[in-house]
Amino acid sequence: MNTGAPWPTLERAGARVLGIQRKLHKWATTDQDRRFTDLHNLVCDPATLLVAWRRVRGNRGSRSAGVDGQTGYHIEQVMGVQQFLSELREQLKAGSYRPVAVRERSIPKRGGKRRRLGIPTVTDRVVQAALKLVLEPIFEADFQPCSYGFRPGRRAQDAIAEVHYLTTRTYEWVVEADIEACFDRIDHTALMDRVRDRIKDKRVLALIKAFLHAGILTEQDGFERSVTGTPQGGILSPLLANIALSALDEHFAQAWQQMGANAGQRGTHRRRGNATYRLVRYADDFVIVVAGEHRHAESLVVETGQMLAPLGLTLSPEKTRITHIDEGIEFLGFRIQRQPGRHGHRY
Figure (spheres, rainbow, N blue to C red):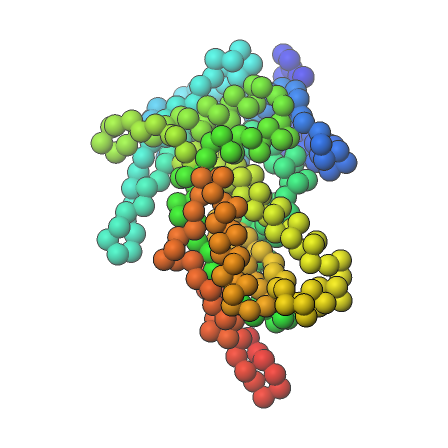
């Protein structure tokens, strides 16, 4: 796989990576039971590393140094991009590459609190970006339509539009859910089990585990082990969170199928005293819209908590609430509320 091959131009690298991604996505879509092997060679491919570098360098975060003190600019000026990527590739191929702890930085929040940020090294960001380029098209074949956050071609506006559409129909009760410290508390074993459902390449699995366990160098120069959660500040973290939370998506998708194959069957389902409901999720921020009664929404809060528990996650009792759409909800920074009008309801 390009062993000893010269480094391609960025244009050719982009075309090659896109071709690889399309093949991976097609294979994953046509064979839902397939577990992928020989992915490590794709991660190490010069084209993958070059595209990964470009994505990292194009992000403003490349100006911030991790624990090694190197920025993207420093690498360009002192070592040169090709030399940097060549050495990184050799480390990956030899199995000697090891991610290092992320550097902690805290920034002030409203109310006097502080938010902890993690800054990985540029090297670790490039490897995570390369992993994401290879893994994302595989898992995209499995992700449900109800998931919108940190996915290609999907935006917060799409999730908001979906909630707005559903609440103009028969869905009047809304569970506004809040997962406590989702990215910090995802159980590593549960996450890796879901990754292994699709990935069989032991070297790729080892890389993911190494990032999960890399740890944090605190502002007081202390070291904190990472026993739960996704890598702080990591490019790979949103994808890993989506892989974990896809268990919730799949649960609600299966429930939706059991409510009926069409609107008529779902109407019959409701007339028998049952509820119909839909999940709309943007990363760890989600709502459940319910066509039914308040008691149905209450049951769904309990059910959702039970689904999250194996992932090491819990709903915040203080921030999770059930709201009627006439009272309005806040979702992704937007307010959605139904108001009575002369010619029916308006929003």
